[in-house]
Amino acid sequence: MAIIARSQEAEAAQRFVEASRNVDLAFRAVRGDAEDEESSVTHGVALFRLERALDELARAEALFDSAIRVQGLGRLPGDLEN
Image 1 (cartoon, one colour):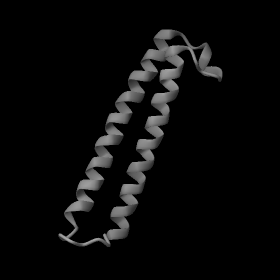
Image 2 (image 1 turned 90 degrees about the horizontal axis):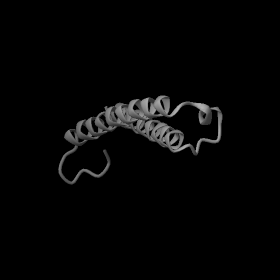
Image 3 (image 1 turned 120 degrees about the vertical axis):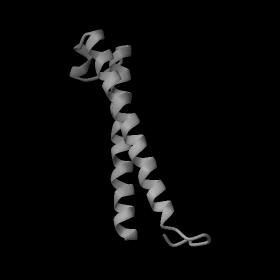
Image 4 (image 1 turned 60 degrees about the horizontal axis):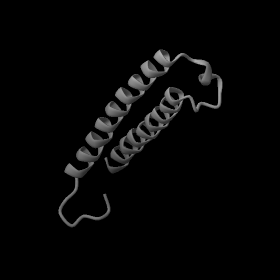
């Protein structure tokens, strides 16, 4: 069970990292700093993408918190291996 819980933690952490990167890219597009094809998007589109990226980041954070909480419930006080 510990392996499954850690796998869920890892997947949740990966989702959080990807969501964080997407927020960074979207924020750069809003500021006009984008160095790729995103730089040509309108400000309105960039703001919409930023809002969606922030929403996904909030969902990813909640999933990660939930995975950590579930893993923590399986631990005994003083148990350092799980």
